[in-house]
Length: 94
Image 1: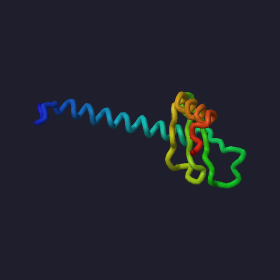
Image 2: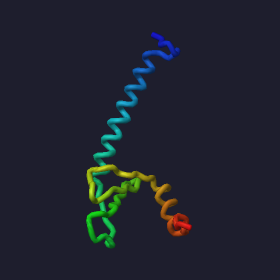
Image 3: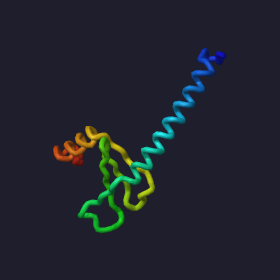
Image 4: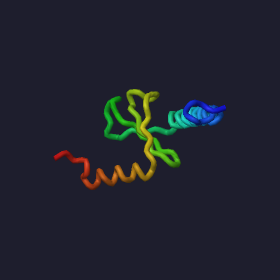
């Protein structure tokens, strides 16, 4: 059956199924992120710190104040570029 825009209802249903699969994969990944081994800097002397965890293919960051809150996820190449930028002084304000 075709829709007004020419696409088929079946492809729309497939897209919805794909989105459902992506949501399940994201939920699983999020559970894995939360159960990762998290570390804080030894310079942190209160609860307002950034925690870091490493997986086989990502570096994860979260707030120690909200361990169940949002997690930033970087690929290894993204993280290496960020650290290199810090070492090269790319983020020092003028």
